[in-house]
Length: 308
Length: 261
Image (tube, rainbow over all chains, first blue to last red; front, side):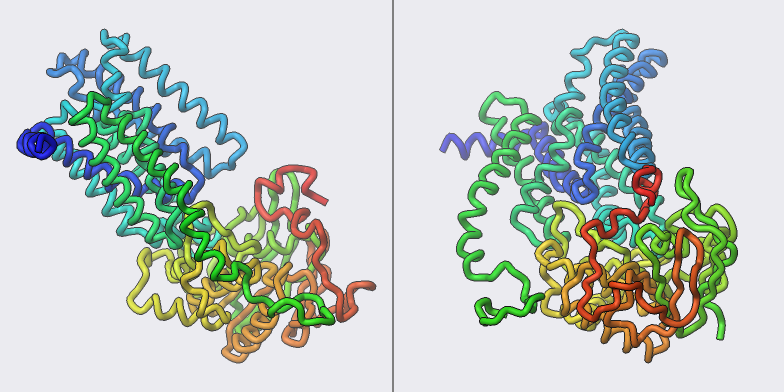
């Protein structure tokens, strides 16, 4: 009974309601763009953008302290959005130029983003403690205004990511062919980068910049263990993302745990369990179906030993 | 008969190396042309330059009378189908053959699968004998089947000009047979076809015209040339161990000096 009582108290608390809705919405939206990133082998783009966004947060803080804004992090999210978009486009430009230098360029962005954020926040008269909320998430302090913003941004992400699914899949799956069809590949690539940047900033609230990428990538990693098509991978990942976000958050209502980290640990546990169980489930199926394609032999064998 | 492909004094440099120079070539409507040449002779690069996938440094190439170099946006891309050399399997996200073929329905002004697109994609898969594999993830298909998916992805566009880059390299016999049959059908329907090939092999009777590249220049343009000694035997399987490795198929490889002959 006590569990039910606590659940009722949770549902009746506006603060917890807000955080639950935010977790649900972000859990749904983050894997949408994560699916394209995994397809493009850019799983770490979210991390790079997250690090750069920290500089944006600090910049916003600095502008806030100059203009005497109340509260002084009023521009932090705006700064994060701008920095994340610029960072994502930079990474995309580096990627499209060839991979050799891209690796180092990504590393520079990672370190530059974090170091820049810490230096600028001290310039702004803040401390590293002020950054913690952005680094590890701050679901508990979400206001109604924040929630509305989160829902709008998540809606934009899902509209682009699901609405332009075939085109975005085309450029992620085979860029060379996509260019030959006349699709504006560069525009679509930048669109993916920009939507990824928006995803990073919208997820910042829930799990924090350091763990943003996990919310985008781990549900996709879970989904691709059990699916066989791109479309189903995306929708399974969305469902899985929403489920781990909500369940992870509910766990923290009953135990004193950090919500962002709990969500990510839960997601990775789900991945581990499914990865471990899958061979057992697949074993029966695998034996029934011959995994080899039906092919004629390339050589002439005297006895018909193998079937077809 | 109008020229679908027109190339004048084309020059392509990748990095510091000149891959193609002084290429002149016209292909008229309904022609089936094979582009032959040794590894590294520039035949793939010529096809990719035609499609605007590698930058043109000199001269010009036109498709349907429109310059690929200067008016790339005006080129009627929906009328062109392309089958790249290596069908990309993509990464960890599984994608079905059908999903891949559906991407062939897109072009510069169409970013969505049109009404009836699914049926067209299934028909295209059936035309390469893969109707039963439509919902199989690509990574579960053999190399030859993946190549056929790439061909179906180009065919679903119902192209007037079909360009294929080494469609026969290292594929199994069913794929070769499917391809030869398909080529006959396309020819009878009046589709213009350009094929980059290593050697003519089983499709020799279907090819009226061969363009042979050697060291980045056109060495022959006309009827099918006799195979080099040792390459002519009927049972000769022309897939070298190093196949494709010496051909500068993209910029990254081409700027590395050791990838050049």
